[in-house]
Length: 177
Image (cartoon, rainbow, N blue to C red; front, side, top):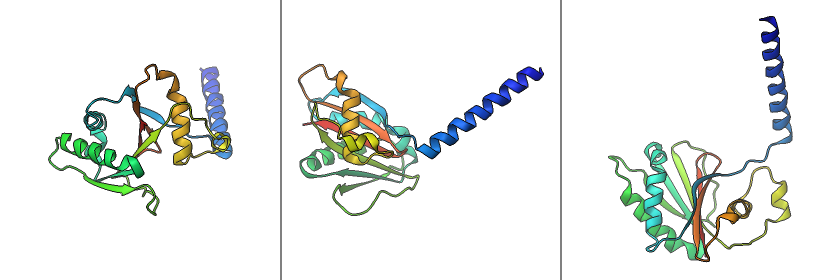
């Protein structure tokens, strides 16, 4: 019995030491898959239905959902956001707000807010060397690293889309150009 307590105590000390080391060095955070890579459907509004189903538990606890995009992706983001909002069947839906990616202001850390970034990507883009060293990825690095992580899933020449989650309440919908 004493040996068992000693082993558990030693294991606990080792876990604490490893945790402290990771905190000091800074472990790189990586994104988690929410929607696996899939072919972009016709009509594209079906992406909004997929998001409504997949993110429904998150929408239940959110007061606001910020849709962030820019340039040529903005009209597509508006369609996807509209369809997603229509497909959420709740008494009190969260408020959907469209924002341009280039607008000033960093996302708030409120728990009742969801940030959905609608971004475009191209296959085969390389990951810049500075992204390999970052502990918390910016949007461009996150996009490049995410595409690299799922690149082997692209078996068809048609465009794909997928979604990643990063930093708790931020979701990144990547749609191939």
